[in-house]
Length: 168
Length: 327
Image 1 (tube, each protein chain N blue to C red):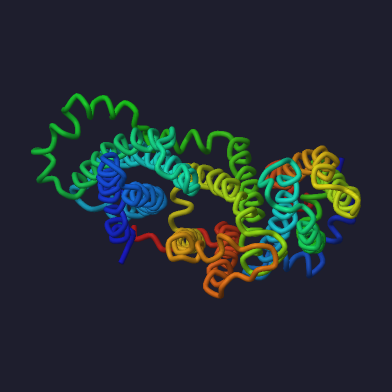
Image 2 (cartoon, rainbow over the protein chains, first blue to last red; image 1 turned 90 degrees about the vertical axis):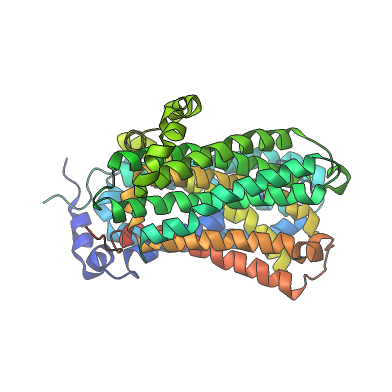
């Protein structure tokens, strides 16, 4: 089955071609770089919250870690924007790969868990630290597993694609 | 200046450094010499970092001299195999030294013996021996006049025959690393997982010093450091394995060497933080308290350098072949 034609339409635009083919260090690799920065902020900050809820660095008061959530959202926003740009650069490569949809699904769940951590653990001021850990432990384990899955699915995009560009 | 110069510049450090480190460690065994033990552990950790640089520059040095008359490819391969085995033991020694340093920070237990110190002693003795062999086999590459007289020590003796059997063939090892794209994908995956753990845990520590989430006492957030070390360890292992798999690809790449420079500067950054009093100045920082400017400077430098490491790592692919090879 041939890939749908709209992928070729995107690929033939000047912007997509520039992103893909420009030798400038501010084209494709620059976007990939910010996608990695976003990963570091989003997954890095969420990992710290997860580890603390699972009992690492127990002396750290949990409530102030709430301030890490905006960092996670900045990371998420960066990756949403750069992710769209990466798809524009290689639409056929990404959109014909089942792993791409697996990655988006896993990220969807991971963000849902992240938001649940915030509303159910951090925004309930009636909870003691012990109760926060009790309520957060399961979510934290899911969070770590899902982010691990998201990184893995993302890395696999480089090894599992069927077409690099639209087949001629 | 080429890679041969650079290799000669850095390769003495792990050879001499491990001997000095072991000497200090042995001195500390007699009586209460906490300071010399601490110094030896710091030296081992530093040498573990510099040994990687010595190992990496060797590939370029090989490229620079391989066409020279009288230089034998076999001797180079033997030297590289010896270096790989020595590097393995150097990294294990460094890892146990870091564990021992972490355990000794609790003042009440600082003088106590524990398993990590036994491991340091054992592995550092082996490392010193293996490093001597790396030096000897390396010397023979360019100094054929010593080959005959030292033949007995590097090839003939019982000990070297035994060691030789454990030394990998660099070519075969590289083949194993690149044989399966799934193994390669796995290493790269773990390199990104390590990145996330490292940036997250180092990040929260540095942010606290810089004044973010000041309600958190510094000492508590410092408990994340073993996770930062674990993240770094994952990336050190996967990074070195990737290099051995495609050493030509990384060697002639500016982004790769600048990344290594940034990592070495981070080693210096950590040393300055713990050894100049910056750590002491923030150690007892309670809720709402501000860190002194110098500690903030160290924390800011650390953040900038870690993001530089990510940046340079991301550009390795696009900067391949940017260093000209003199063929």
